[in-house]
Length: 249
Image (cartoon, rainbow, N blue to C red; front, side, top):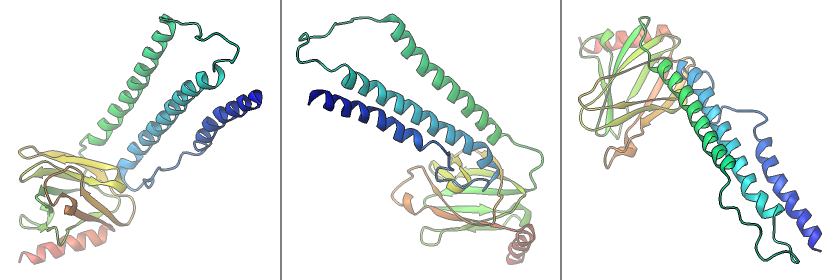
């Protein structure tokens, strides 16, 4: 009976990692649409790589936990205590170096992608100011005039209208506390810091409407600090700017 039990435990120990690995046969977008913005092109591969790394580390850790429990179980007729090993320098070196290499590689690719995402170009065609405030957003369109400002409220979140396929530079600030300008579908997040001006550039590549929100706790109505990103054609965007100009007349 005991040998059969050991065989079953060994089968389970080998089956669990196999189930985890089969899920990696095709790496999906992991909840993020591919190509929705120019940032997705940079961030998606990093996001996928982080999940693959986490999966490999998790499966490896699971194997290391189950291996001694399954294959080195105490035998009924064996000694009461197995051989005790106080130090094993080669193993200690290995499990120190491997995590260091993993962290170093992830840091390198994260810094590389972040640099590409935050680099300011000279080819941005439009400018929009994004101001966070308790507890909504204010979007200003300098191309349409100094007073072309859309201000939202928690009860009526504003809409950020952006052109398809044209690079936009966003000037990001805050009127009060720290906020987080976050568009999940675009894999974009930039902090709105009081007294600090941040800049972010990206191109929206797919028509449609996408939810945006503040992702930094900023007070009692933080959960209501929402907005909608509406990606329109360049012609529709120009018409929208003309509408904003007309509203100031």
